[in-house]
Image 1: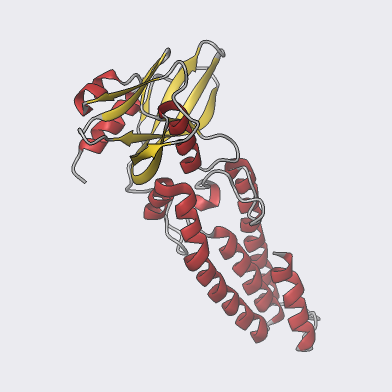
Image 2 (image 1 turned 45 degrees about the vertical axis):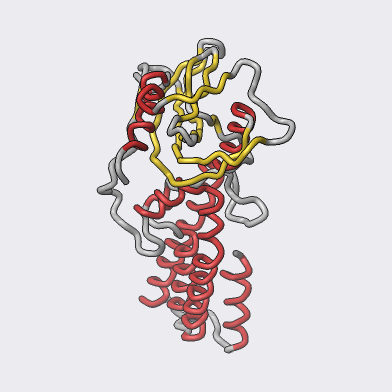
Length: 295
């Protein structure tokens, strides 16, 4: 980013013979404010990537989780907007038409990069989670913080004073040819196939791993059903978790070599109504009901 925002503009100004203004006028003040605002947005994005995405904006260290907080709550590409504002501020400060043209070229290239590469990559990586984010947040035009989209439901009772560990998870509704749903029974209860997303995994990778371990077969991830949060306590660990769970459809693709169900996990195939009554977590029962609704 330093190359784009500082080195190239400096070279352009030097080649055009543009020098630093001798006096500070309204144009310079406005340009400095605009550039500072853009730089603040870019830094906010970097911090949000590290805190919420567990990664960086760099392609060699991308975020492990989809980032939809901070500035990404209002627009999908705030990093590029911040960079563009820095260039616009510089063009205004130096009163340089050349820098303004460079800024326009920057946005044109970035737009093509976002549409042709970045967005398809995010869809492959985060599947339904990204589709939901994309449906409520625009690519370039910031939207107000209030949204007509209903917030995901929260199940379970939050205990006052209890610290909850946020745990991203993903679960699948898998239907067999007899219209029965896969349910995994464990010593702790009955659940839809799936589980927590480990560091370094995408949600789809986590789901494929969990289903392979629990059920012994491969899957193809389908449409998104919805998202819900389940508050749970783990007496064994003396911890409480806020499980932010994504629910998707998936289809069975056949057995996986050298894999099978875990020793304390039993795979059941139940009618949807029976599955909804059997599942331990309210969020899983909610997902089955959502899946049954016409879409």
